[in-house]
Length: 351
Image 1 (cartoon, rainbow, N blue to C red):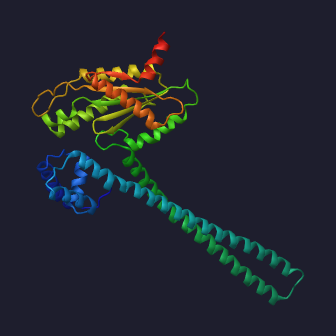
Image 2: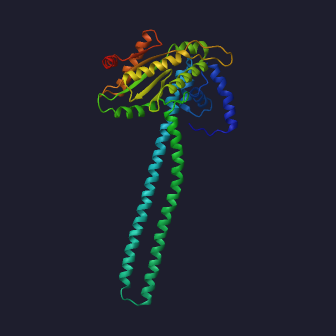
Image 3: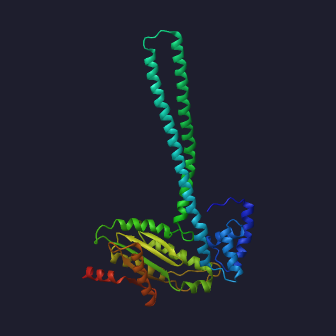
């Protein structure tokens, strides 16, 4: 997202946005703030219409509603910007191609002119004929220089444009693939990495696992302590996950209080070990409210794991891990459950 408001405008909007968030009991996280910023600044008509319709119907503004608006009307703009940058790059390439073609034609014509002038000079000694050839040669040389200079000017101009576009592209790529609250990969970022990891699975003996992780009783945390503490809990879990994985692993905020961990080159027993380490680390840690020194109740997570089966889709793999997660919750939460297919494989390996 890119905003061009002045500092004074930003300060004024800040003064209006925060009370709006408080009035509607919304968390002051980056997503809710961005949505409310665009609503109050009238910079996004679609967001304004959606919120006004909600309020006119007497409905409550929820954090989930803010996330939905962000993903539909704000985050999607980044994809439009990517397409705009892509179109601009195509235009630059076409311009350079045209300039190069023009210069190439001029060079070809110039060479042909030189051959013609060489042939014309032959055995002539007529000063008027020679003067005419020299004038034509000077004219053609000037045309060649003009074409070359024009192409160089375009190269210099487009070089600066490309550098600017590259910087914009890097920033947009980061914004699109990273979750604003936790700094983890988001689902869009996961799509790229999981497809790449699974494409490397050539045989049934190769191993790639995923863990689905959900914070237990998260709604109660929000209801008891408020959304700001809820966000703090989400960040704490995210930080814990990052500490428990290796360099090639990917931790993703899958949505709300759900996370997904991609474990390439990891066996079922290895994934089970990682999952237990995550569960134990979160269970043992207590979160304290800085303003009161009060400890929040025990934070625990439920985890479901699954190993990639050769030939299945990404959605099928995630669905099996999600089903295992549901079993963990059904069996009392704060536990790890591995997909039944993988439990059989694990028992066979240990036997």
